[in-house]
Picture (cartoon, rainbow over the protein chains, first blue to last red):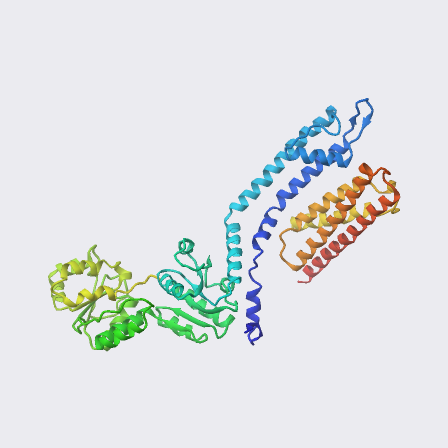
Length: 417
Length: 128
């Protein structure tokens, strides 16, 4: 099982020595150097002065304080315990020095404690503590676990299913709120999580990439480049480990597939495929849907009302392109409307129609577009571009005349990670 | 020139020289071992230790370890001296002084290792 014994071992060793769990301790030591030295020096000067300044015995003979007495006196004075003048009453010269020493020690303590408090509250320190805690909980995982990079919408759904199946996972996410939400505990098992950039190999190692119980990596961030970096790091540091990555870019997909044998999922492509299959063979789609659903999920309803009539495609982004391609391959007529923000390379696309606040209502109101809409049987919408307002408004307005559109909301693409 | 390096080198060297100054002389003769020098050696050693905090390199770790050894030995020497002076009914006997000085001798060895490390660090830095 030892990965280190395999051939490309250089990168593994480098990554493994990167972050260390004793980071917080070193940070404290390093930051506390100056306050400690100030404290030490002031204390040493006070003690030395006490031993040098001549005192007087009760009978008037000269007396010098020993180091031990001076150390004892300064220890209880500097810590504000204050037993009084021991071993005997001081003379005025000694009292002058002690007055000075008291103020010096107060300054020294105030500085040291202030420095310590500001260090404890500082962001790097708390980050170091969080990293230490995270590394410890990952190291102590004894069951097989998945390494999840990115815990947005997709990660949350997947996490819930993994949790239901009794599988453990570790989360890395760049967003504070994603990790905070995990702390609130919707999962039954404890999920170690850290706020960090998963595209850094060190972070993946911290998250247990080289851990013997790590069974796979899930690259689910909404950043294609970050997902690619995760796939690359996993395939180089831990060859042969199962990697599942998402991307909505064909070129990134190709680059991912150059590293090991990752399962790359392009949600837009998948959607287009499913859409096309359900147009051609609804029962097949229903069966596939049924077989691949999460445990305990309700049975999918058959989509009998899909008709291969003309479809309006609202929003021509990456998602729109995928769907258009898949639909046209099935011989379905597609009309494209785009607000003009995206790049539209379709000659017959209607660009710039949806620039107003209520895009679809506008589409329906204008005479031309009404015509366009009347024979439309379905509506596919890129939620990413229009936040879903399109189909909701369309539902109110066109519920009766346009039968097949009702079904559109379940075909909305969601860009949420 | 890096001021931090100057301060670091200064305290490491001063710790070693003060320690040596206290150590040198007949091992059981209290008159040739100045207790102020021992006090200064303890304080400077402690400061040198604090200066070595927070260095994660291998050589930094060894630096810190040798300093901690020197602190331990010197504090033990100071405790024995205080005990002999203030507590023991016989006062500072030659045997008590001998143990104080031999403890400081142990600290001196650790301090010498520190100085050697400093020199090694400097030499290897020059070569780079």
